Length: 70
Image (cartoon, rainbow, N blue to C red; front, side, top):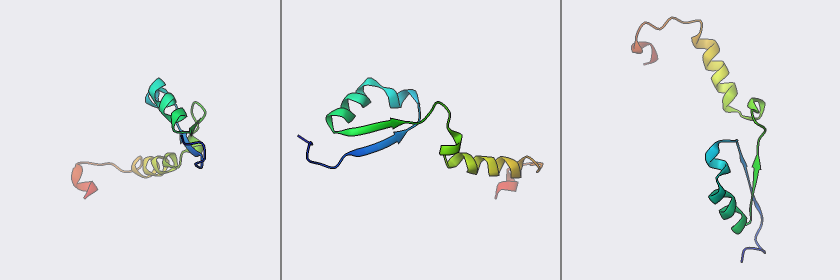
């Protein structure tokens, strides 16, 4: 049914829900290719750089109460 359409590729981490049999069946039926990242590929996940920056900044600051974040 979808053979003449462009192929969609989705890059996923290895979360259990992403590897569910239903996801695999539906993606195959819709001609969607699922590409899984390596077990832990933090260098491929941009949010990891954000967490690193936040941790580096906050690790040097003593937070007495939540007013600090306002």
